[in-house]
Image 1 (cartoon, rainbow, N blue to C red):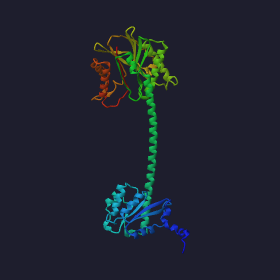
Image 2: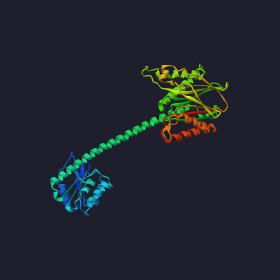
Image 3: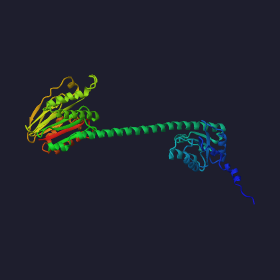
Length: 441
């Protein structure tokens, strides 16, 4: 009895692996041969036996029907070229396979060369164009030179297409990465601005604080952006004396918010010094402080000309009087169903004109009457475009709304004014920060 020797099997073990598989880990051009004639497969392989382009040889895949070709293609998406017979299991099997490639797989990279041994089944020109067929030959044309030329041209085209696609994908990836970076930077900016809004809100008197001193009051406060250049301010000097201001700083958003912080800080410092008592004196000090803050570290040519418009009221309940001074603002006073416009100075705080010549702010006194209403506001509401004619809301419209709603409570009047403003704006972008403070005494 002869014993089987494992070494005998191992002698022929390498023959179990096809020679073609040696290209498995190499860079190759993959070509799918689809023809129901074995002789065609052999002829193509022979004609391209020594083919090489860009240092890469060919790896062949063989299919003998359209259905078999579909399976191979689905498993090898990086096939560069398909050499395809038109007539196989059906008279249009080859064209059906091309439709499958272009329509179902949406693969527009693979190059396709059609051939047929039956010229009567040749595809029409519109089919060749629609399905991106790169070449068409009859089998009688399949000489070695013609095969080599068709394959070389197709692989060159495929290589160029894939190079462009590689650049596109690389660019797309860079765009994705840049977009992600921009989104991250945007988030940081938005987070910073949101935090700035919290800081700004914490500095502004809350509605509860306003209501504590003025139970009948309302605030319409609508920043154009997250943070605002408009601000309102309140400071109690004594049990009977209270200062209230509404200010509109140059610009809006972050620049305006910086100016509002400067203005708020300066007002607090001026009041804390206890050196001035009238609103006019405070505005003079505020004007000097703003100019100094914006020009301290710059030359006169580079100095900022930003500033603010403001209404500052001093409520002196001991003497039953309101003292006020304004910088390019007006105060509205409603008494006995009549609306009065109180005008002060037309110069702004800071700004180019105030830098050249210090304004002489005047102090105005108004007796306090029971039930009287006063309104302090920035220009954002009156300058808003809207309505059917796309015109400004205007101060006259503010006055009309206030008169028409004068019988309402202050809270209801504030809501009515806000609704009128939104209706007027009617979806148009808000142009400026909006601030209006109403107080009933």
